[in-house]
Length: 112
Image (cartoon, rainbow, N blue to C red; front, side, top):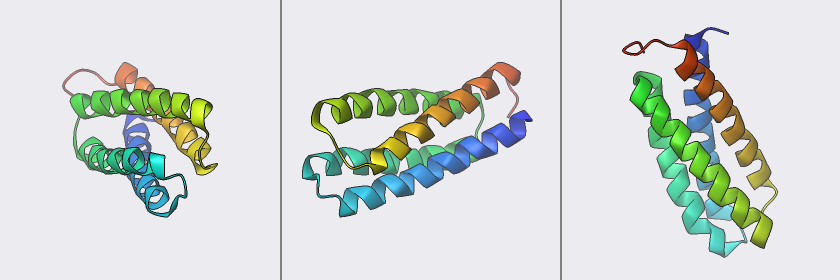
């Protein structure tokens, strides 16, 4: 898989999961999760566009955000439960981390 394809997949997943987070936030019966899901939805959407057009700093921001989302969201899910759709969100975060990390490793500094 080429770095260009990895970057497009990461950006696409970020855009998708941004919308997915917002949709779940708007429809969930788990009210205590709505604000966090909405915030991460907006953040992932912005990062998706930035990653699509940006370079290394955008990818690093995406990796940091996916790490925080996976860590904080996962811990909250383990402690308090949540909708099953969150498991898909965690899987997307994991794919973003793997592909984003590979992109960082395989892309020279200054390249996009």
